Amino acid sequence: MEPVHHPEAQNIGPTGKAEKLPVGKLHSAQYLVALILAVLLAGLWRLQVLNAESFRSLAEANRVRKVPILAPRGKLFDREGRLLVDNYPSVSCYLLREQVKDLDADLPLISKGLHIPVEQIQATIRRFQIAPKYQPIPLKQDITPDEQAFIAAHRDELPELETLDEQRRLYPSDGFAAHLIGYVGEVSEQMLANDDRYALYSPGDTTPSSAVPTAAATSSSTATAKSSAT
Image 1 (spheres, rainbow, N blue to C red):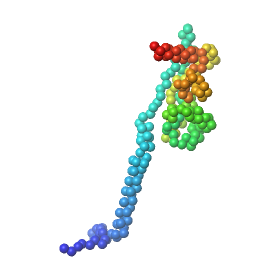
Image 2 (image 1 turned 90 degrees about the horizontal axis):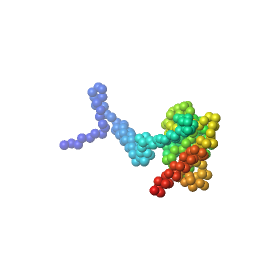
Image 3 (image 1 turned 30 degrees about the vertical axis):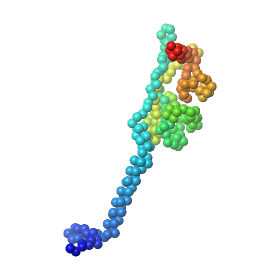
Image 4 (image 1 turned 90 degrees about the vertical axis):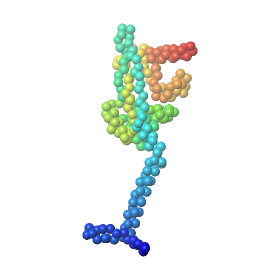
């Protein structure tokens, strides 16, 4: 049996005759296919191995979102049953530090959309440096509908911004009985560092400042201490 030689590949042309395909073109096509497969395999390796942890975190963030629900504070009435202090619905904006990659680059856009100076945002972030990274940072309270729309429209660009529905205190507009009703305020750095009563508080927590709220908090703390002792 004589050996069969194939110096060149053949192809059947439109006329039905065998047309010779140059070996150089055939090799070029093979190299091109091999190059495309190599690029696809490199991309697959990058997604599945090199950046696996990053994409796993993004998928987890899309699947599970922790939304704290704050309980509304109780209303205050006088002995005649007249309402003294009420609550009103409000929307606040929080910064999620776990969702941000380059916060400094996002600050100008956040400042423009929320109408907050960049220096004020930076000062707020510095104030929460000692807080756990998973704890949201309150950027602005009582945001307007336009600011809510800005956050919703830039959800992909600013994933670190989150809104939260809250119940805020509504005090008498004329300041009636303010010295008796009292108010609440945010825990300051000095209070956390110098006062043992705030040892269990975190930056951003609110605490009663005077009068009725303070008395209620004191009574609650005393009751808890008695219960623990019992």
